[in-house]
Image 1 (cartoon, rainbow, N blue to C red):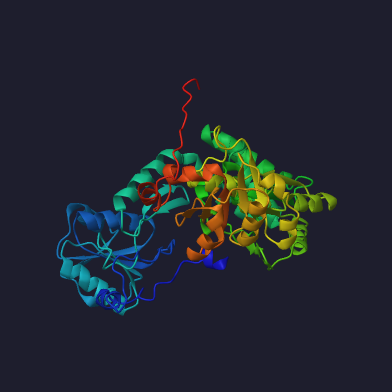
Image 2 (image 1 turned 90 degrees about the horizontal axis):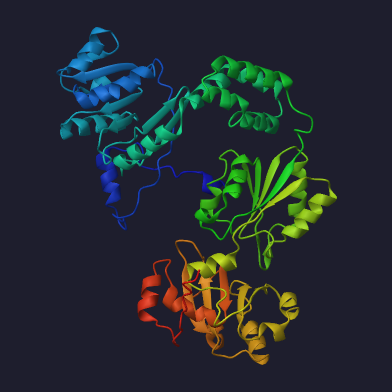
Length: 519
């Protein structure tokens, strides 16, 4: 999981712009490839020398936030505009008069090139890179090595937004939305927590208990008092809560069994999202998407309990032991499962174990793969003309295949949603055909359902295994078998293959769709 948390470090971060250009044109370079994401940092500039090259309006805009942060600001330019002249007169900046000189960079911590002369900006960038300095070149992503984000401040609370220089207007629009949503009481609460930080740490030495306490403040009585501009009352209330200390039982661990859905983070429930934000420890399956994991608290402990057909890297008993270990330490544990924990997720087994050991728990359902994959493939699982029932089936191994009621599964006018990836398709076909299911029964194999890389392959029962092999279908994949599967040829709407499928692969039979206007 660590790989999902680390941002790649650009090897050319401290190269000169000209050196970086040469590397970008190297063999096999793809000009359209997106650059790696920026690594976000907050800098303590108090007392540190910072150089701003430029004496106009743009430079003045960059200077003021630096002064607010306590930086020792030096402005290099032949002339200063009125705003910068005023700052110079007030002794708030030092003016380095004249054209840019490389020695201006000798002892500075950060440099900003804010002129309208490209050659000057390039010289600042090249000289700064040679000195291993961070240099920002205003409105030039090619030359810059550090971006200055759009900022929202509420007391000591700072929200920074960056598009990596790709869309500064979009970053500004997002900042405006945050400005509207985050009122001043957030900053006031942050200031109170700064003042009482050491007192809170001493009173709540147990980290999970301290975190729980902090999370009760907003929303909570303290937050409500701040929103009502009752600052003295909010302060008194906070002191009272600190002195009260940990309530009895606050160190008791808790397990949330959370369904992660099929992979699209937009399909995670709001409650599931909240639990990921509250968790101390997250035990997640291999198939939980990185995008869903990115919604969790950054400082949570992530433990991958990789379980897949045929290769159980972590046994079920091992998962039980981890749940018990962390819950008994008073932590809030999220057991995060792909899809829904109660649909072939062994959720029932885990709850039985927790109950037997006296660990409190809850279940947060998720959208199971059959619902999500079928919907994103344009396949209704039930239909008045074609399927009056749907069966969820798993067939991961020989024992589970032998235990299935093949006579019932082979009946017509029903849909089979088979959670089996691509294993056992030969046996599935053989058993269904032997029990009377027509060889022409429509089928759809859905790989990575609901995700950007989704692929859907339509065939019939007779050609099912061969289709999977020809198209190299890989897990996670789900099979939809039944008359409704044919509808996906015409109703496909999601993914890059949907338009081509609709245009090039018309349904083999005409299907009349009824629209009931009485609803």
